[in-house]
Length: 89
Image (tube, rainbow, N blue to C red):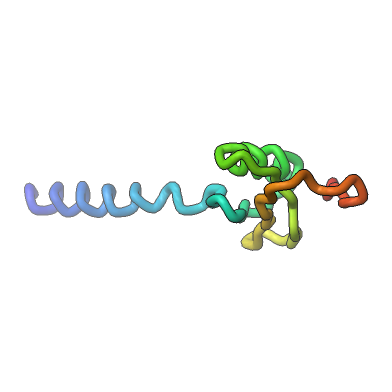
């Protein structure tokens, strides 16, 4: 009985460590955001919050509108030109 409890706790801790895998990931060069309709609406804000840590500007580089795919972005030193298209649904 005690052995089963230890096994359940160990398994639970192992699975709990995987929870944060599916969120936005980024660094000073750019990053990715898992695609969903809600994430697409907030993609530029999410990207800018990451890039602003490095005093850079976020630029959405691609959007693959399918669950399991990603929205990718780059962090630029200079602001993007006005002709850059905003990706809105």
